[in-house]
Length: 78
Image (cartoon, rainbow, N blue to C red; front, side, top):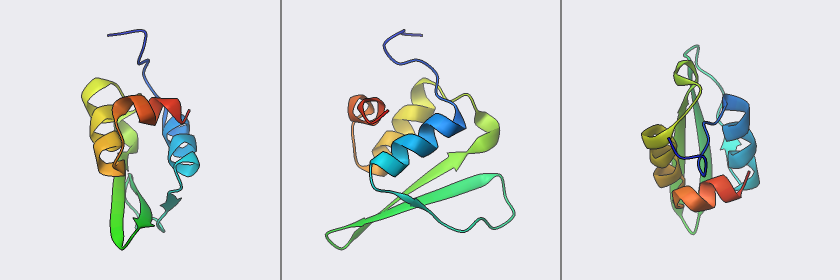
């Protein structure tokens, strides 16, 4: 694993998503969190699977794609 992209905790991801303008949807009794942001009529939805914490590599890249940003931009919002 690269030191450039260290593992992220759920709290890290929540802070990143907040900085990127996302807000959490109300929880529905599952371990998954849904974060949403509307941009120019397009809805971006990021699923955060809390039990998979700490989040590494592919999972962080997947959340970044869902957020509409690169992995680098995702970590940059930290």
